[in-house]
Amino acid sequence: MKSGGSLSIWFFVGLCLGVNGALIFARGIYEAMYPPAEKVVLYALHANIWWGGFLLVVGVIYSLKFSPARERARNAAKQ
Image (cartoon, rainbow, N blue to C red; front, side, top):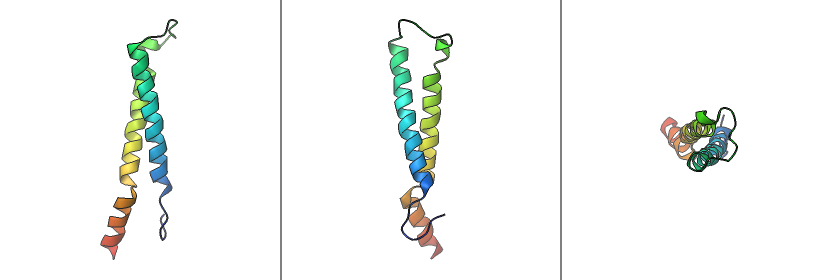
């Protein structure tokens, strides 16, 4: 997966998921505090909060698992 000084693509996937999850989660919290005038049918489920939180958690897991520091430590242990 990794050769030389390159970084794993999954680290950047984790960053993207984490950033998008944080934005969606923040918007969901904002909408929960200040509800819109015309609510959609399933507004009470707060899908933004659930999916934003899920994306944020998955993004953090991917970013930590494939972080460059962890890869360096793993490569140093092999040598």
